[in-house]
Length: 122
Image (cartoon, rainbow, N blue to C red; front, side):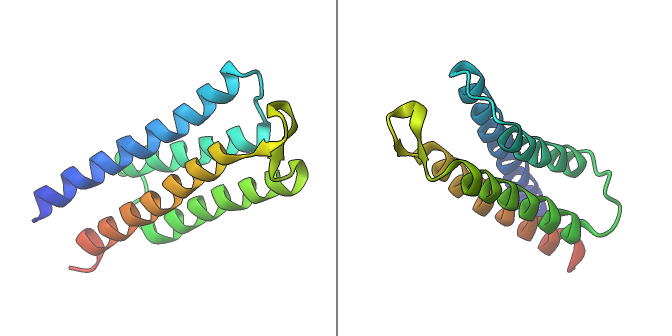
């Protein structure tokens, strides 16, 4: 069971990292880099690095909740400042942002839950 869960955790981590890097690349390619959004991506990437390299020692769940929460807060700040629509795309809804957040938050929460259940609640 532990080996299977470890594989799932690694797969989730890689998937989350790909989502964050894709978000940054999309913004760079479209010349729409926003510091708040990129900062939120880097927070998740940094959390993944700490997670994958086992640098957290203790308080894993607190670090995870803080990182995911800060990611959400920064994206909500971005939406509050810039709006739910993107004028540079004809005023359409920020579907990509919602999709990437919808993927990042639950996958990160699942990864945190599985890791905490496997390694801290034995």
